[in-house]
Image (tube, rainbow, N blue to C red; front, top):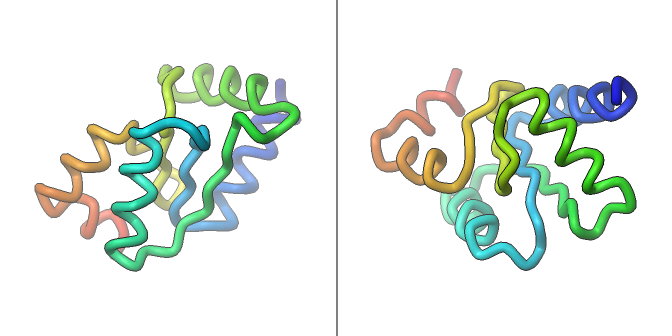
Length: 100
């Protein structure tokens, strides 16, 4: 499990916005579309297309308490899922997080 957590941390260190996703998930699509609409560069990991995707999802759950996708991180900090991301956008909190 520590190898997976190291991988996750490396990904968060390498990109300011990371979305852990599943390609068929409509909530994931909504989150990815929001970042595209805002022209925010983001790294997407499609867990259903990764051989160790289930293990990564389990590691993310241990780290954040969130089992569902999308699982969004801004500058290494856990934001939450689609509802959290959309609400942060509406309130202006997302822009604040991105500009820090």
